[in-house]
Amino acid sequence: MTKQSWLILALTAAVGLSACKILPTPSAQGGDSASSSAFNPDRMVEEIWTSKVSPYLQQKAGPFAEVHALAKTDPAAAGAKYGNPKKQANSPWTFAVRVEGKIVAANTQSRAASIDIDVDGDGKADARVQIGPAMRGTALRDSLDFVQFNDFTNQIDFAQFGKAFNAYADKTVLYKLPREGLEGRTAKVLGAYTIEGGQDLPLVTPAEAEIGPKP
Image (cartoon, rainbow, N blue to C red; front, side, top):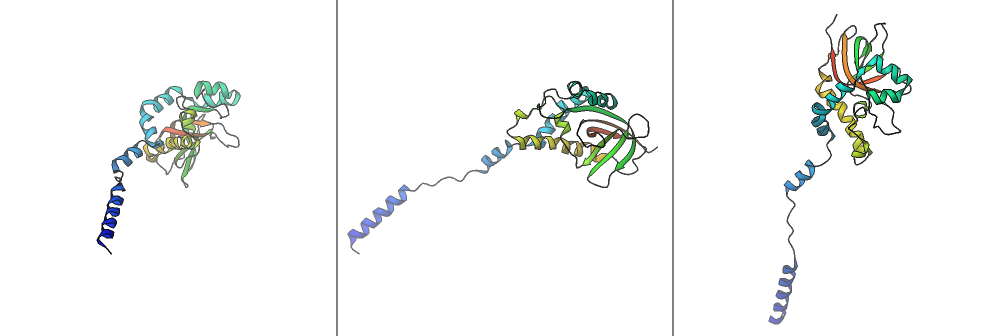
């Protein structure tokens, strides 16, 4: 190869290298920032539980017998008084209630544990209370008039937010409850329920719950 050819080759390589761009690797800090701003329903519930959720339920809830009697005859009136009048038009009414009475039956063999409570003293169950850890429905979320579907990006986020209420109640309140020898004990519950077809008993999801000592 001639000296002139070597010179042309060297110049070509130099031009090629100068045209290359070295792009910086995205920093880990940027990834953390994106992650911290992501939708986090558990954290959202934790942040409003003490300041908004508990005070709302304590103020809105009525005695179960009173609420349920009105709910059976006039669900809209019961919902406006004891629930969320701003609910979506096609959604069922959800009611905030206080359930107090004697435990007449208990199911603690599955993760979806529950207790049946007699509130009027006739020896028969009037309400079924979920005690976790697995709980159905989104009654706690749906009873709150400051939580609206339009505040969320999509149905999935809204559903996850509803489940986060159940998870928070379980990890802060329900996990402490006894699981043995429950029948005959007294129970006091603050929570919410939705009237649904096919239910044997109204299914209450608690935000607060206490179980008395063995008789």
